[in-house]
Amino acid sequence: MKPTMQAAQYNVTTNKVEVNEIPIPEPGKKDLLIKNVCATLCHSDLMLFWGHTAEKPPTEKVTLGHENTGVVVAIGDEVKGFKVGDKVGCLGCSYACYECDGCLVHNLFCKQGTGRLHGFTTDGHFAEYSVVDSRNSMVLPEGIDMVATAPLFCAGVTVAAYHAVKQCGLKPGQWIVVLGCGGLGHLAIQYAKAMGLRVIGIDISAAQLESARQLGAEITFNSMADPDYVKQLASATDGGAHAVAVFSASNAAYEGAPSLLRINGLMMVVGIPKANLSINALDILLGKYRIQGVSSGTPQQMKEPIEFSHRHGIKPHLTTFNGLDSVHEIIDLMEGGKTAGRFGVVF
Image (cartoon, rainbow, N blue to C red):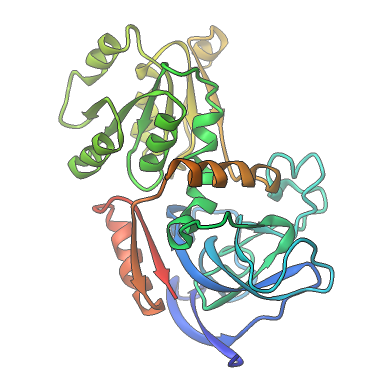
């Protein structure tokens, strides 16, 4: 194995991404060294460029990405349950204790304060090789598509597409609105259908709405082109949806979401808008609607959704590129917001 590798790194000083030749990292005592098969970029990774994150890179340059799959090529002395050659994936936060009260909610709340986000406060996976904490990793089910599975270690497991739908607590036959049918929402539609829910897709992109219909959304609305969509939705659902999961990063989407709910419906917060949300406290007090959020999964939550995805054949819309030199094209496509699905590099 050569001593160096290519990595796509965010430069703190220039606020740009550059592809650099850097040393292949060594795994620590509890780490896995992974030869990456696929690494995908998430919308939240772009928050580095906006300055819209409290998580600051520890050095001048940090390797991008917190979604990946790969093959174990080396293990630390204290690693248990893994061996060289295992096909694996991992969640986005390493080096927490994974056991305290804080970690059971989000690993960044670890009482030890040691959790580090890949692509933000520790190096991520847009590299030929990457190091991950074995305690936050899993061996993949036999026969799984490793390329298609890479985004699920964020979009499908953590940020929404599985846990946001499941944690709405709906019964089969109830209505859920997927507000924002793109990179996360198109997965949520698949999960909701597999759970027996009735799905309404809302977006401003005709392409994403067509995709939503193909994936099983019974009703779709273009919130910009359909001025009466709120009334039409209320009529079709006999009073409004039981839940609306907001995958959009638009403040306008959040402002309109409560109007889509029946009394005491649930607004699930997933997308991260640039400005803080504004709510009517009296509406919450009276139970007009409820608010809940879902964030990164924990190791304890990881296995279930990955295996659910494999059983039900749930895959993301994924556009792949060969090699790290394509990272700038990927970022441009994501910032433009004109193309649905996820984007990744295959090594």
